[in-house]
Length: 530
Image (cartoon, rainbow, N blue to C red; front, side):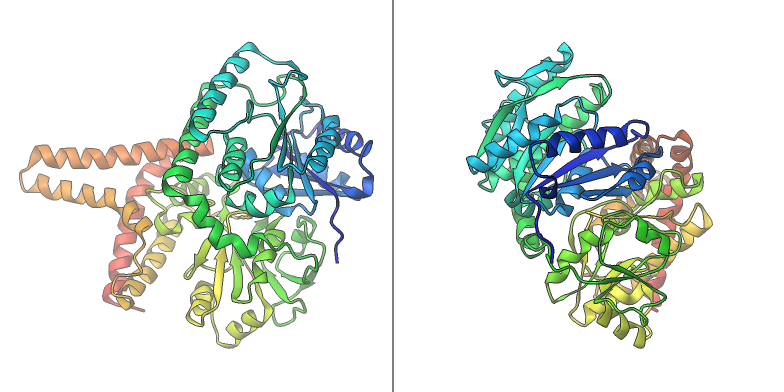
């Protein structure tokens, strides 16, 4: 049984190997100067760091300090969410790792939040008591951005973006699981969604900011992405009501972070245990030999995020949940052909219904996801083994028996997908054949909208070729050109995401071949079901 600490401090970090250990120690020293050390928990989240940041942190961690690392850079917003969902504290503080903001303000923020029963105590550069030194360009951009936020979201806040905040356990349980923004506008999303759900007790407090140009700088691309994220938040909150609907699905899981944590038997690479931020792990040679209530099965060559088990355990508070699966992300150091295959699978044009397996999607119940990496109840795993059920069929087998499998994007494992071309196309064909079989069995109701949309450009291209052959030159060329434009735009985005022109170039023929392989496999499965 765990006793909750009073305060959890979350420190997101990316590529700060030389200074990170010293900065983390300084943050802890300044916080525990006014809050008893036994009441402070520090969680450092390494957001896909490519240098030795994670290794340094793992080697230096001591009592009261936890480290969560995953191999793919997904953005500061994702890192903060991971840290908050893993936090045990009654209050949670967020502070940047670069020390531009003075961490000694955290105890003061906590004291005010406790005394006045606030939902948020947040730093503000515009508070009269703030001492700030940062570039004029950032001042101007920040002012205009805040005016936009006040207009769109009616937030009575003068500065949403300062990376120093303290918020209550209620926010962690009820708001943080709903967040979707991974990078540029997560501060705004946190405050806007909280306000929409009635958490409006917000107090702005002074900060000391000494901008050292050590963190992210203001770039036109970052500004554009922040504006796009802001528009998306408004659309989801005010038009689609996405957060409200997601809240209903997550109500049980988000409210339960078990104080009594079950023993989890780890089947697979034993060295993965050193990466995992979970206190009750035991190694097991196989699922039948496991003793834990839950079994964590790790595929060959898969490297789990530090919160893989921690993020899954709360869902098992629901007795109907048999298993939890997470996306498998391609590590940045994968081979070129593997990254090119990932570029196809992670895109809306090529991934279809498989996309969320290779890029974080949204939490939901799944019925057909492969489970070579899975956390499941031991009893369900043993029943499946006795029935001769394989990894590709486990989730469907559970669903057929009324047992639910949850997909959560709040954790991940890193493993490369089958490489271009032949292994990738073979995997695409096999997946499509299974989907064709399912479509025949369900008279088409199993066909997902995501797959249909991903194949729509290819259908347009086929129509264009048919029209060209029939002599309708102008319309045919327009349709083929539209397909080519869609492929080029998608591959350009892939090249930017993987920071590789070669990935983009390889992805161009891969998209066309993937569409052909999927259609062929689907038709084969539909006509000759397995």
